[in-house]
Image (cartoon, rainbow, N blue to C red; front, side, top):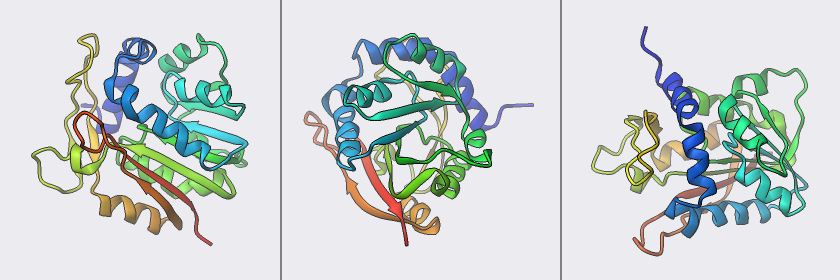
Length: 225
């Protein structure tokens, strides 16, 4: 039986964990160097958290960057291979926990801020996060997402929600088996927030200084009261 799209995402990250870790730690990804790494750090710092959950932490760079700034940060990822890579770097606290496992806990830890940095790639998995995020946010806590900007991510395809083929174009040839991802319009993102009682308090569109196109989109939301 063929893997679901969500299953293909998981398989791709397991396959590419070591190659991806090399790319990140050797600072080979131009958009990250130019824009998106500092953008997400600044977004988290703007919320002045004491505790942060790095949801979908990958090899752990953001967790380490926040710990270096004296913020108590915990990184989780569903990929055992990526968490193994994270644990081989100094200065971090990580665990292999899927989104489903995180929200099934009867009493989950709560955080001042939950951050998802390019880690919301699927359809059902992302909807699961939005439905349950309030369980792990403290009162007035912040939910921060950095993701592909729909204007750039749409490419030449129709501007409508749907699964798209993955690609490693512009990345190392060591990366294989690109994962599919679920494209959302800006309207669809806004609906995800509002339908789950999350109030969008900031939206940022950092530009790539070379292309003058959005390098990403950043959403910052809080629980609506």
